[in-house]
Image 1 (cartoon, rainbow, N blue to C red):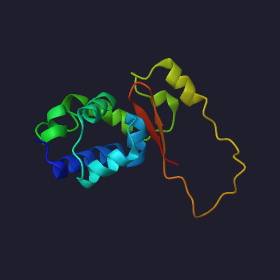
Image 2 (tube, rainbow, N blue to C red):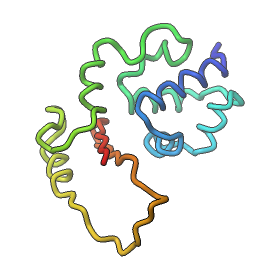
Image 3 (spheres, rainbow, N blue to C red):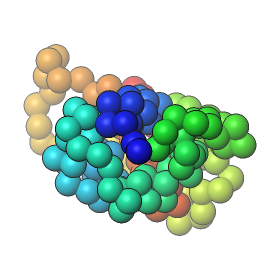
Image 4 (cartoon, rainbow, N blue to C red):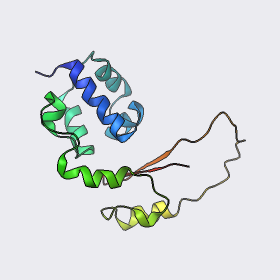
Length: 142
């Protein structure tokens, strides 16, 4: 049986590892934000559908680790690939080889644009995260 509090800690570890918020996580795996909130608080236990969505979106997560804490996260075989996927970088040429050409074109076409909004010293960009359809993502830091 899955311990809700321990599962919540493992779920939080996934969020911390990828440096994403619960909201971004819920959007990524296409579940309601309240579902994530209830799981993180330990109120609810995860459904099979939720677990399968996490495993599909994050291949570095092992089933037995997610459910009962046995095993590893990230999986030893994926640590090198994951490291490439989460390291900040300054150019498109450093993209992981598994990112296809369409994704590279999409990233290379990103250029700073005038938004018409006034800049404020109070609101500074911490990072920009781009999620690719193949499950990889890139983090840009100013």
